[in-house]
Image (cartoon, rainbow, N blue to C red; front, side, top):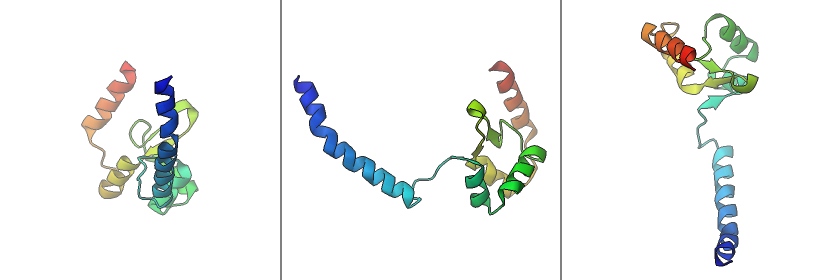
Length: 104
């Protein structure tokens, strides 16, 4: 019973911490690693149509984007690499990702 009372007493503190996290997120001080199509377009300064075109023609699933549960999310780190290095994806990275997909 004392443990339950202790937990209940922590609720205001937890609520305050959640509020602070939400404020930081709104101020974009917490960086997201995974972006949806609209966020990826905004991040790169492209239209969503351009992002979809790149997804179909240039980017590779399992490297630049993933489809967990059918929802497409983009890896922000890989988008940064693509901006820096273009389409020059390392061969060993492609092999590793292919092998990982086969072993999954």
